[in-house]
Length: 291
Image (cartoon, rainbow, N blue to C red):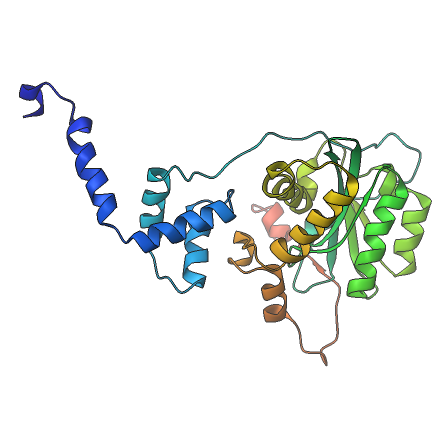
């Protein structure tokens, strides 16, 4: 029939598809639009999770079908400049984080620094995350890329979490983290230092992922004039949105502040450092025989 009428099948079905969308629950489409506008970098999976948490049982396939129809596609942005200065004479520590098996909070902290371009100046942001819960436990802003920036974020994390000896602190090998002041501060609380290898940002992937989220969902979404304005908005994003509202897939779509109490050990239970997850000899040499 389409051939005889000399029209394409897409043109024939388009009015029917539009009519089918109109027949869908308008309240559902409104909820999807509100969620997508509030979280412009959420894909259909996370939008579905948000709707279900709001008491709306909905199928993910339906959300996936409706979002493109309403032009609600997750946004993506470009990569940003690295700020790591590894050309220094300080001691560089081995990467211990890659073999850790995490079972509790305050076993592994990951730290990183990024830059933010403002209308009037450049500023730098340092953050510290708990690798187990993905929660931001410390952060700081400064106009200078010096060791005091990393120390300010670390001190904030220590004051908030009071970690016990045995904590592993992982970062890149930048001078801010390898400086004498940073090393002494970490050793003073009984922490063990761990650093990524040069040119391997994925070895600090959890912190790098947070920086990407922050820039995509907050910093890239508006223009800031000065540091004071940025400080206020970054604090709101970290403390209110990211730690309490955002739903990481790695935490089974629970916000970090929801995830931590569910995983918490009893207060009477002794705290233990993270264990090492190393391969067994038979996994390395599967053809080996003998005792």
